[in-house]
Image 1: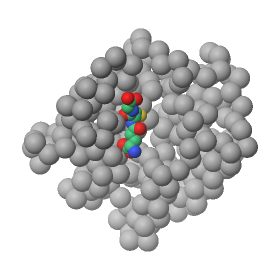
Image 2 (image 1 turned 90 degrees about the vertical axis):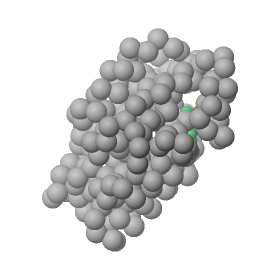
Image 3 (image 1 turned 30 degrees about the vertical axis):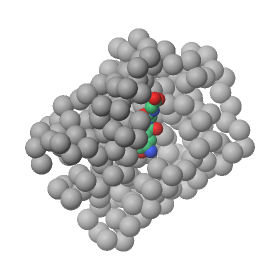
Length: 219
Ligand SMILES: N[C@@H](CCC(=O)N[C@@H](CS)C(=O)NCC(=O)O)C(=O)O
């Protein structure tokens, strides 16, 4: 692996960018950030310099381009075993919930857009989004039942599953979603993480406003 670079979007708005960024931070991997503002008029051209998918994040390893967050984390997992839990059965569960996150939760994502720099009121999840939230609660309960004795993350120590769900925890915080005790504790863990705090702080410094991602009112 040569010097790595991660192409990311706005820290305030790009939940997909946060996922591999947070994983790299927790792995202690040194990497360069390449920032593409998603509100730029030429955003498509800027992203096209790095990826054929038209989406960020993209990991650059020399002349190798890896797009799609799950492809990025699996590339990293080939070098860093700590990406996934050590136990095979737990690892299978961690991969299942991470893939579920990647593939689903459209209502939650659509109605409660990632917007981490402040808190918002007046956003009421629809029935479909509520069902997504309930499923996240179920996943977190299942994972924490395994990880509870080993640390505060989903499987005790930080793994890729946390990178995948941290943006959801931040969404719950932004929109003040009422949560059961296990989920409240997990959101507190995410919010207390030094790397997450640095990401949010950087998001606060950004001045771009993407109107379709600004739901409700400042709380
Ligand atoms: N399935 C992709 C999703 C990536 C994605 O949707 N990224 C958004 C930003 S969060 C994007 O690049 N949008 C491009 C744009 O808004 O022009 C992944 O897992 O990496």
